[in-house]
Structures are given as structure tokens and as C-alpha cells.
Length: 230
Image (cartoon, rainbow, N blue to C red; front, side, top):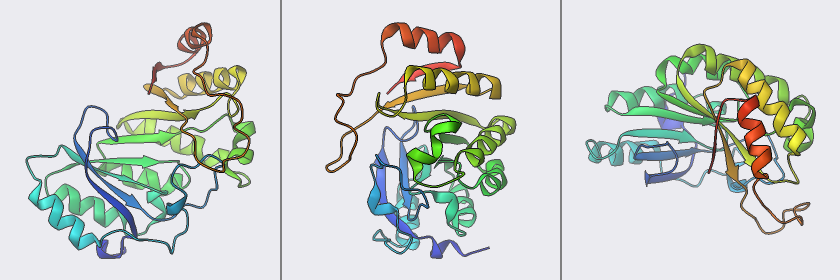
């Protein structure tokens, strides 16, 4: 197991009110992601060798000073389960007395499953339905691991939410309905549609952004788990 000092950190946010619902958290952005999603809001974190954040020792020193002020630490990315030093970093954060949350796209379900006993909350991305996954991520066979990760998260009993970045150019109403049924069948607790935010140079998003129509949202709430908009 890699020492936590080896964690490739692409960025560090000492305080966030949005990365863990209803909690004040520090966020550690772990460098590296094998997917190339067309709407990625953090492309600087994609390359594994591009880490430009502080060292782990510096992050730990900051966290130690913030004990009693923060509720927890969230490891985000990139895809944090890519990093072999993540389990030790999680253990260090817990040793400081923090609850630990994780943002993951479910790319490495076995690594995620091994980490779940050490986590207090998971924000798992479900980007689209299984049929459309490869096109969105730019990588073949990318959907099946996510569904394996979803099953592991639900079975673990760890508090979680499933997040989907929504744009009408990405997910049709029928696609959303398929996703709702998938999540309900899997036993997911909570589904959040996240607002897509434009990024310069992103192709294929000429269609104006808007939330699904109220009738569609009502339909999704009938088909799926608890649904929120963010």
C-alpha cells in the first residue's frame, strides 16, 4: 500500500459548503482520470502527471489546524480511487477525527468496494444510461463498472447520493427514465440532477440549457428514488 505522502494532489479547498450535503468539509482533489467526458468541468485533473496542488503533509497540517471547525474531508478528483495512496490518506484523515466522504465515477468498482468500510458518505456519478456511456466518456466498456460500483455502494449501507450532470443534449427524457428505473431497482437512496455549467470550447452544447419539464420530473419521481435538483 502506497504511503499517503505519495498522493497526487491536483488541488485543495480548505472549506466547502457544497461538496458534502449539509456538512462543512475540506476537499482534496486527487489528480488523474482515465475518462474524457465531453463536458468535464475539471480537465486539468485528467492527466495523471499534472498534479499542481500542495503536498499531502501540507494538507494534513491544514486539516489538523481545522479540527473542530470542519465536519469532514472529501476526496474528489479526477477519479480518486485511481491513486494507490488513497486508502492510507483516508485512514490518516480519519485518524485526525474527521468523517470522510468520496466523490467517484465508479471507474474502479473493486477499489471503491474495498474502501467503503472507511467512508461515511459517497457521491457516485451516474452519467447516463448504459447504452450511452461510452459515447459520453470517450472510453469503451465504461458503463458496466459504474453499475458494479452502484451495487457495491448500495449494499454497503454507506450514506450516499447518485449524481447526474444534466443537459438536454446529454440525456433525453427517455434516458432519464431508464436511469431512474435502474437506480430504483438497485436500491439507491437519493438521486441528484446537477446543473450543467458551460465551459469554453465544449462542442455539441448549442442547445440552451434547461431543467426537464415539470411533468418529466414528476414522472422520474414516480419511477426512481428521491430526486433533487442542484
